[in-house]
Image (cartoon, rainbow, N blue to C red; front, side):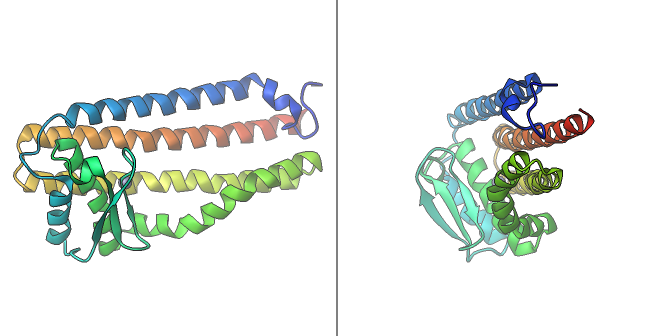
Length: 238
Ligand SMILES: [Zn+2]
């Protein structure tokens, strides 16, 4: 096949219809997940949590789980909320920290859920944390190794590159149970805290939509890995 140069990732790659499919499917998945969380968040940010801010409820959830030492800080941006295990702080966006909506409480409690995971030594959380430095490394080098493999026409290097890329896929997969579990802890607490069935349902919807963004990211990376493997297979058969 003259279109495919060298080992098969060369200039031909940009004309590969299969690659175009991977890009389009990834894009559609990502945009659909984003649109879904935005819609769920917008809907439930209009429903009051009866005067409690995200910070109030997250603080109570942390204390109820023996995590009173966890700090709560404000972070700029929209849906930038996260838990940082390095300094053991929740970082909440203004709208979720101060906001008194079902959506604010859901997101704030989800982040508190991560702090509880760490305090309880939740195994998937520990595994994910252990993978962070590994994936930081593999993500920054896999493409360089791949390009070296292509230009030096060394099959061994491209195989190593794919193995390095596979760490990102494993990381995305390990992230899923960590995210689901943080949401499960959040919903359990919100339920216990005496909110109405409608408020609990709203919180569940917001957190399910948020989880779908991680599912979309995981599917995208699996798709990319499959593409890389198919590409290698094909060029070996050429
Ligand atoms: Zn999370």
